Amino acid sequence: MSHLHLDLTTPPPLPEGALRVFALGGLGEIGRNMTVFEYGGKLLIVDCGVLFPDEHHPGVDLILPDFQPIRHRLDDVVAIVLTHGHEDHIGAVPYLLRERGDIPVVGSELTLALVAPKLKEHRLKEVPRHVVQEGDTLQFGPFGTEFVAVNHSIPDALAVAITTPAGVALHTGDFKMDQLPLDGRITDLRAFARLGEAGVDLFLTDSTNAEVPGFTTPERDITPAIDAVFARSEKRIIVASFASHVHRVQQVLDMAAKHGRKVAYVGRSMVRNMQIARELGYLHVPDGVVVDKIDAAPPEKMVLMSTGSQGEPMAALSRMANKSHQQVELEPGDTVLMASSVIPGNENSISRVIDGLTKLGANVVHKGNALVHVSGHASAGELLYCYNIVQPTNVMPVHGEIRHLHANGALARKTGVPNVLLAEDGYVIDLVDGHASITGAFDCGYVYVDGSSIGDISDSDLKDRRVLGEEGFISVVVVIDSSTGKIVSGPEIHARGIAEDDSVFDAVRPKIAGALEDALADGTRDTAQLQQVVRRTLGSFAGRTLRRRPMIVPIVIEA
Image 1 (cartoon, one colour):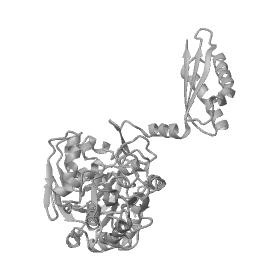
Image 2 (cartoon, helix red, strand yellow; image 1 turned 135 degrees about the vertical axis):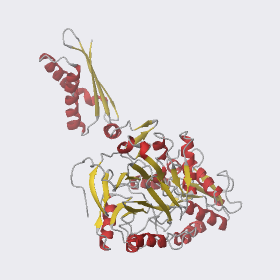
Image 3 (cartoon, helix red, strand yellow; image 1 turned 30 degrees about the vertical axis):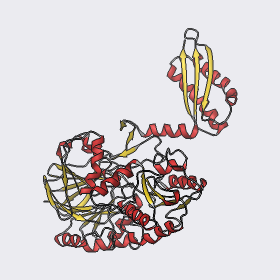
Image 4 (cartoon, one colour; image 1 turned 90 degrees about the vertical axis):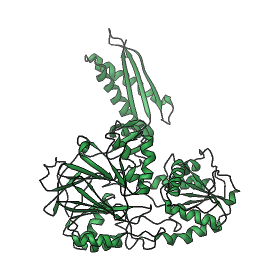
């Protein structure tokens, strides 16, 4: 397998007739998927998604792909192709279009319908859109595109085959091979085989479940488990799922109709997405099942379809768990069905929500104690099947954390793929004369959305936030006579987030004063240097006495 063992190196000029591929997100994390294809001076983008923050990103709303490597070349972008409508594949589209608003956006009917409200929210009115379906072929500059049906946990997902004079690249998007899908739309292995017969030079494959042996469980297999939850629940049922998981919502609606219950949607994104899915015919609502109010029927006859299955702090389920939801107040005996898998990195958040729900007396059913969710991604057996069908020359695992990419690469090697490239965000792969290799890398990092700020928050800012949240804050004010160089006031110490009483600092005040007097006696009058003296003295005391490393803000004033 090929790796880049060097420091970041600027990629060389792309040879004439070669295809370049690089990811600006999605390789090394579950989220912010974005892959750029370059040929003949033009760029084609596949997906443009977001990554949701975890506890290591306090205050951050979203994390975007790093557009910097292509920012100076946005006029060369011929299209953004979207494989499906999940946030980790479409959520960053408006942020890119804010930098150039006339880039054509290409995707299936449902995918573009889910993008539309985002464009409206960002006041992007003139964006060209191309609705495609499986079997369609379109030309964008030097890139020929063919769209292939794939099965996933959202309807209308597509793989895309990209043809240039340099060869054919097949990007699966997110997919699995459910042979009995709820909507009857299977992954088109015939198209995969046909493309393989013609020759696939670079195969970019979903890696999320590469460590999981066998085949992913069919969606239909969880219906009995959901039925059992409905049958034994005597009070209200709250089902938490992704707001885009139309198949799961369909199962809940059908089960509610069977058991004589009403369903109300909770969460803005759930309401919006299900309205879109219903209007387009992807969601079939039994007559009289969906209601507008959460108390439209007695609790034992109500189901709430909610967001928040990943423990997101502001999502509906998390607010129910911490009793801050304005409409829904959980009662003992309510059943909460968490019908989703755990996205890596969200384990702690989900555990906290489950604990909060349990403390309130709810019966929590989740993947750990019942078969109430199946993955939307191909497991190892399915990936092996695809490699044997497509028989690509070069493979580049995509969509996954590092261990997932390595596991997927190992599977490709087992099937005899001659060249496997394990890339990370920013790595540049050039396909020249049928052989792909890593030729360099762009400096590619996280871009944080923090309120109205985009990209202004740095890793050092986040470190400061973590220190404030975990270690506390201490300010020290000292006033010095500018003419005599003597301390005339202070040190005055104020602490926040420190459990000990302020009297704990009585012992360090004389030490701070003494250190300042020594520095002043040596002729130091620069306030920045004096502030450093205060910071070092107090920091040493806090580490030794309080066993913590708080944020210290020293203020030295000359009067």
